[in-house]
Length: 306
Ligand code: SF4
Image 1 (cartoon, protein in one colour):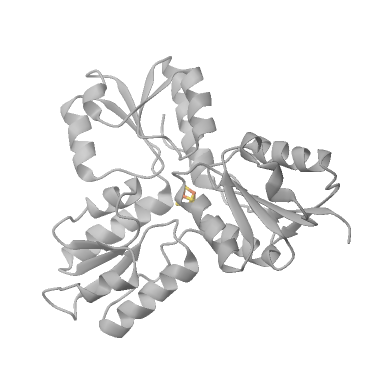
Image 2 (cartoon, protein in one colour):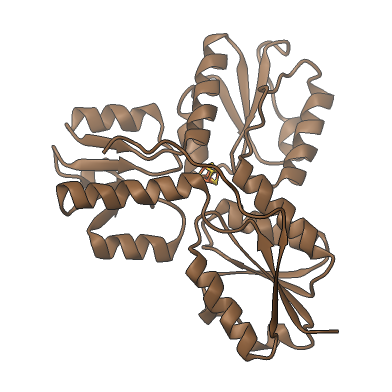
């Protein structure tokens, strides 16, 4: 059998990440440095470092931002209280929240206004969940697993809605939403799924190649939810899978006996890091490189006003 690298397609940057990085670069170009960014603009250490070198300053608290400065909200979105705080500090805000995250915020606001209890499926400590839950904190309960459903109580079971984080595992989320439907048959789901197109397409591409590979390397940072889920998807298919920041984290022993290696990357990981990993594998003798999956995406978002 030929030794092969199978590159999952699509992989890497999604439209929301491209938009957020564009916003930081354009703001620095237009206004000079520093430009402050609430939280990592996207969850990738290489991207963050490159933007820091250009003049971005990443902060977790708005108290770190001098009054009147320019502030960018990251792709993950922020709760309304962060917008109020920015206004109080007279910060000039550029909003790089991904439009697909904004869609979930709008759903949370709408359903809360209609008097629904919101069950938000996602990772409790993830910044996107903090932002979405912040839209209607009194009406929202965050759950992660099927077990969490057992302890849920709501004032009126006929007025419940389920929303989700955009970057979850599609299969794990289906298990949770099926269990929710079983316990609360009247719970409603928004007409269009909250897990975003980029998360779905990258997971589907990994599923497609999983039957053919001995190992999957996913380029992405540890904080990147969608990158972690790509590793989970491969492992559920019985494939050895590792999340790595870049080529320097590949361990030679992982590749012993490997005939076919898969490569993918999270929605916030730059393509040049994938190319470096492929080059490393080529030097070890895995010479044939093929692309598999449903191919590149053609989605673009309107850029934020700078
Ligand atoms: S992963 Fe999805 S929700 Fe997140 S920035 Fe990309 S398109 Fe938007």
